[in-house]
Figure 1 (cartoon, rainbow, N blue to C red):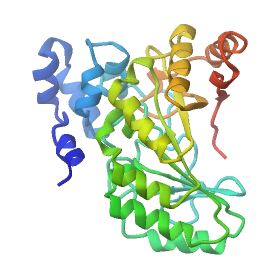
Figure 2 (cartoon, rainbow, N blue to C red; figure 1 turned 90 degrees about the vertical axis):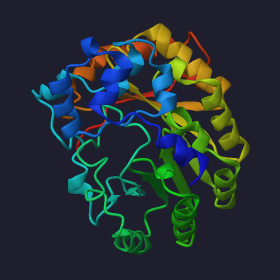
Figure 3 (cartoon, rainbow, N blue to C red; figure 1 turned 120 degrees about the horizontal axis):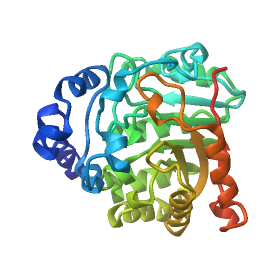
Length: 313
């Protein structure tokens, strides 16, 4: 077992551990257990370390709350990805790009997850049905850009990561490979010299990371990002606009500036999706526009991402 896997085993995964860590007065045991039954709980030591107190921006992202049980207009598949899935594990919505789900699990489960209907359940992202996905990509020569996601691709072993990169590189019309991961934030020890060497072998490989708050850019996270950048992987960040986490122009500006300093180009700020169980994270669209206006002209143009509202179809 590798060091990162040992650290992963130290993660918090039960309501009893939440109570022990944060106190019974801060955990509605019955409601939180129902939330966990609906969507897995796992918080790595790195994610736990940034939670300073109940209700802070990191508590909101990772700790289940009774609010997840209040479903008004949220839907399980808010982006209608399943309708754009011609074979298991592939979503092909845009002409020259395809999304390839290669892992059903994450190091830490974000409570606002768009794919909470699937993530954490190996049966929903089947690991034994990849050949049909590869065959689909071989046959569809219009696809030049493949995004590896899940779950988190870096939850796979080095051998499996290389298997995917090598197999995709053998498909001649695929030019760009992208990997979406939260490992630099949630389990920075996963970014090893061995993993970086694998990435280096199959360039161009772009790595899109996910940070939502400037305090997530710890020394360990920045070190992991530096290793990826030194391996030649262009780094971008996809941030989700979340009520009570980063819906503040000052916080968002600090995040974007810290990302640039860590050699990460801010790519997108996403409007939170209308996903069942995560409706309490949504802000108004106007809030996102306000944040972009507060960035544009007030900081480097490199620190101004696109504001994106992802919609079905």
